[in-house]
Each structure stands twice: as C-alpha cells, then as structure tokens.
Image 1: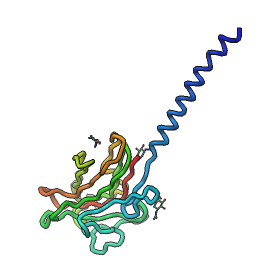
Image 2: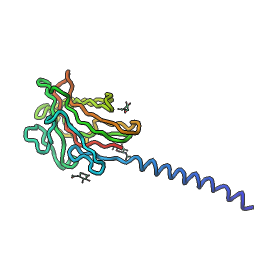
Image 3: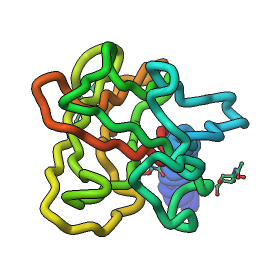
Image 4: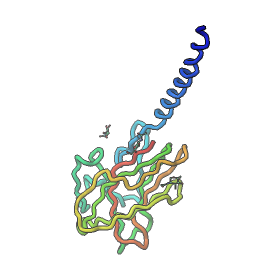
Length: 187
Ligand SMILES: *[C@@H]1O[C@H](CO)[C@@H](O)[C@H](O)[C@H]1NC(C)=O
Ligand SMILES: *[C@@H]1O[C@H](CO)[C@@H](O)[C@H](O)[C@H]1NC(C)=O
Ligand SMILES: *[C@@H]1O[C@H](CO)[C@@H](O)[C@H](O)[C@H]1NC(C)=O
C-alpha cells in the first residue's frame, strides 16, 4: 500500500536537487569582477593598458586636464583622461585595452555634454578580439553636468574564454573627443 505513494516524491526530490546544483553552479560562474582604471584587479592580476605612452593621464593628478571630477563619485578615486584633438590628431590610436576571461563586459566612463572646458564630445569605438563591436557617441549640448558610472559599452553575449577588449577614443574623420575611463566590469 505504501510503495506507490513513496515512489512519487523521490524523482521530484532528485530533480529539485539537480536543479538546485545547476542554479548554484551557473550563479557561481557568473561573478562580476571589477577592474579599476588605475589599480586594475590585484586578485585576478589584471590591469588596463593605455597606448600610446603618455597620451592618457591619471585624471585625479592631472593639472593640465580640463575635467575636474568629484573624486568621491569615481571608483577608487581614480580615472584616466585622454583627448583626441581633431586639429592635431595622434599618430597612433588612443587605446585602453583589457584582456579578460569571461562571457560579459561592461565599460564605465564619466561623461559630460559641456561645450567648453572641457569640450564634452564622446566618440568611442569598441573592439573585441580586434573586431569592431560597438560605438558610443554623445555630442556636447552645453550641459556641464558630469555623469558618473556611465555604461558606454555592455555586452553579455560573449562566447566563454579569453578575450581582448579595446576602447579607441576619437576617429580620424571625427571631432575633438574626450574620454574619461573609470572602470571595467566583466563576468
Ligand atoms: C554584472 O553587472 C551588470 C551591470 O551592472 C549586471 O547587469 C549583471 O547582472 C551583473 N552580473 C552578475 C552576474 O552579477
Ligand atoms: C578599490 O575599490 C574596491 C571596491 O570598493 C576595494 O575593494 C579596493 O580595496 C579599492 N582599491 C584601492 C587600491 O583603493
Ligand atoms: C558581443 O560580442 C560578440 C562576440 O564578440 C559579438 O559578436 C557581438 O556583436 C557583441 N554584441 C554587442 C552588443 O556588442
């Protein structure tokens, strides 16, 4: 009499436990890891690299930079500042590069739409493994407000494995463009 009844719950319990493990395993593999523009991520031994040498300035220490930010609103109190000058373009692209192992990436900048001091024109192009995957354009409109932790690029559909992300500031036929890079998150 008891046998048919006791068989019922067992497969359900097995299924439930299996699903629980699947959920835990997938949640554990998707952890957001933050890489600061300056400090990188010491646990993962990761660092963002900047090219060409000297073209990007640590913004918080930069006296010649026009952008002066609220350091309490930037990650780790640091950011990287570069300007693409349309009337004096650099001989090689202004790039920030991060090699990471993951399936998603989120890139955060500080942006402004100021017309002067600084000229807040955003014009960035993004590459994954040397393939162009996106662009962020935000022209100046006179609003001098700084927007912090602004996601300029997000991609949650990257095949798992090691990838190289590259941000390029400005482009050869474009206007003067400002980039203030704060941090990158990946999972
Ligand atoms: C990682 O951060 C992004 C952006 O905030 C968010 O959309 C995503 O759900 C987060 N992923 C995990 C696994 O926490
Ligand atoms: C940077 O910020 C993270 C998250 O708030 C913190 O864990 C880390 O210690 C900070 N690193 C430095 C060098 O301040
Ligand atoms: C995300 O990355 C994949 C792989 O590099 C690419 O094919 C896709 O176009 C990207 N999507 C976005 C929204 O950038």
